[in-house]
Image 1 (spheres, rainbow, N blue to C red):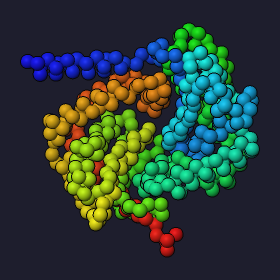
Image 2: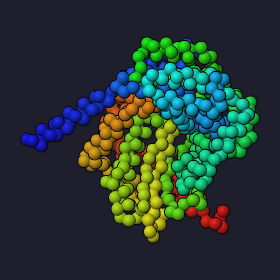
Image 3: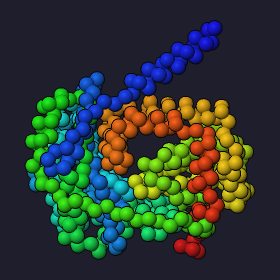
Length: 440
């Protein structure tokens, strides 16, 4: 009886935690097209202001890759009212932190301040949107910064071409701009003229191509007034025409990439998968968890525990138009890459031919419930999730409802999706090898 009581109490606590995780928000549009999302949480005296622009590496043209990532850096250079190099200093001097990041689909800027500096955060982002200084000096400065970033993160970093997709995307996409890396080509950036950077900014960095999120400790009506005061008069940009490129199915092939920075090779299987709006993308997240999440996962037990692999990986990188599913392992000792491939194929076949057990399914559901409860801890995470769900998935309330998608996934769904996407005849098999001195 006591055991039942404890289990009931645990279930109640989990239910309360999940309910308490509900994120209340308000959203509306300014007359210039800027979408605004407000999430008020007065439990701690901090507030995040963030702006996400619907522009990423996929929006670049052939011969001019790397522009979106370049602007992630360039828009910290300074504005009409913020001297060059002062952006970060202003933030830190007022007790805040800030950063930015770029993907294939969007660029995101944010600041987190003590809540009495909310207006400062709004002013900074309005300055970035309305008054950026885009001149040759700033372009030259950031060009060198990005070259150093590429050297540090990709050229001279072990497995950098995998982590940043420069050695993967071109094998899985033929026509879609996802085939290019986010950091782009240094030759393209060197060749670009100042007027091209100015034109790119004019096209994409307008209020009607952005979402502003304020999350944290604030009062709603004064905040709405400040938002209108700082952003309301920013001119609307031209409507951005979105690309609509349909890829043909991947044809099976085997490729080799080399990396002089590694000591241990890696075998990879790479598959193209659906958009992040598709339920199957969520199923593939669960497939990844089955294969490599924790020491009880299938690939870990099969390869790491049996001393055949040093490390295993499987994850679905779902994006706005398509996703990429990558699974692989670093062999240990005398294990060959071919043996690694055989072992991974056996695990894929099991998923395609057998339903996972009820016990494994319940563990999976518990894992994703726990991730959901923890995913929106802190106003920075909430701001990011609200912006991303609105812009890339078209449903802001997924911040509350996404867990229901995972709950709806069945064991049959997992088997079906494994059959649909993890096929030998529609994948790239990659040997990622050490580049020896004679090949350099």
